[in-house]
Length: 291
Image 1 (cartoon, one colour):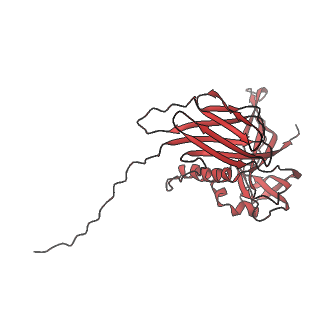
Image 2 (cartoon, rainbow, N blue to C red):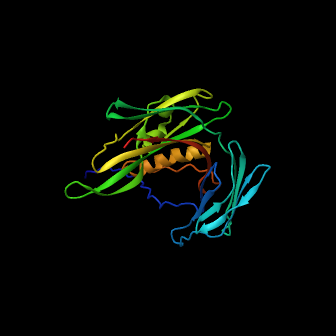
Image 3 (cartoon, rainbow, N blue to C red):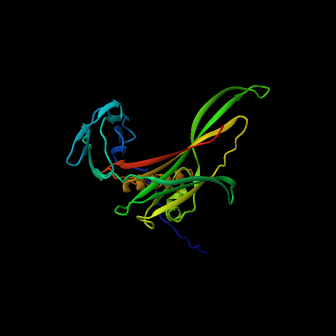
């Protein structure tokens, strides 16, 4: 009698993903008078999801003043008439009937001043002739700074008649797809996961007056039905927690579109929860194109 050798292997049946319950808080404190706080909760799939309308949310500047948020709609709380200036230390607190407690302290990043801006048309490998934007600013030498660069395009779109005449038009803003080859851009691997923004730190140029270039990945094609009116470039100096959040969010969103990658967790500074309580100062540069 012949005997066939065999082997066996224990197969571990994966368990359903279990998401821990906890608060979800999203708020980027800006150097403005109003601050929107979004608050919700992760609940088991078998329980109903309801946005909370009750929470005690306060923002305080160290040694100065504090302000209580008001509920403007389920899950949304607004802190009105409360300015947080550059370098201010601030404290955020949230208490809710669901026994959520969130306490976070941080510092508003320093202001940014653009010292020089320029635009040009340049041939970029793989793209061809496209718009290139150049910005120069002095980085604060006494801080570890983290930056976020983004751009939006304002277009006028025409409704054309059967003979090509313009019947009507509408103006809209669209987030631009951008990229750049500057060393600080390339050193941040998370920039490979998004074309909506460029995130970088001042690790290699701390305190130096530096110039950075980035380019448009989709060159403007002005036609009879569409025209570029302006571009708004925004440079933000963001807190480290905000930097980590945007980086990991980009990777997470990219992974969701992949058939081979599992989405990783989004970085959070919310204790036993999700989201981000961040801070940002910003400067804007508007480029208006001629008619």
